[in-house]
Amino acid sequence: MAQSELTWTYLQRLYDLSVTPARRPLSATSHINVCLLSERETTMADVPSFQGITLTRETVRQLVGEIFIYKMPFNIELGLELQQFEADKAVLTFARQDKLIGNAAQKILHGGVIAAGLDVAAGLVCVGNTLLRHETISDQEFHHRLAHMGTIDMRVDYLRPGYGERFTITSTLLRGGNKIAVARAELHNEQGSHLASATATYIVG
Image (cartoon, rainbow, N blue to C red; front, top):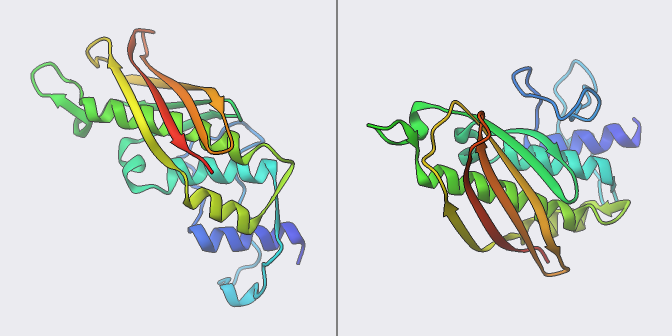
């Protein structure tokens, strides 16, 4: 079995990863393609030793995007879709849903939904910047660093009511350090109205 197949088998099992047709790919060639190793059920016993696995930058980029957007239950509820993810920028989109409404009379987004989306986008670019600095990273270091990252502080400015049917969140890195990273995220609706902004700080090391 090729090393790349072993790596994907391991990561698929560890994070319960799968790709569904409903997901919008990052691009025609960059979305995760989980290896189908055989028709039989694959178990961790099939891949007994993974110590020393090296993950490439592209594998890390795709895996972090998958975990952030499609494996965190709350983020799944928001209906987030990942459109772009680089070391210094991320773009997410989501559609208006009744369960995301915070004002029944005006039919606008709940402030908590807005803050959560901004947090995801800013956190994604900060975590990504940290983990994508090197050409490769060991499996152990990847898990250790990802497990110890989190939001320290976030300021949200609500600029306009959350009207719209489709929303875009764009985040950019302001500072990427070894311990602390800072990013700015902005929310716009399909008409281009700037609805909210956030500046957020994360522990990344």
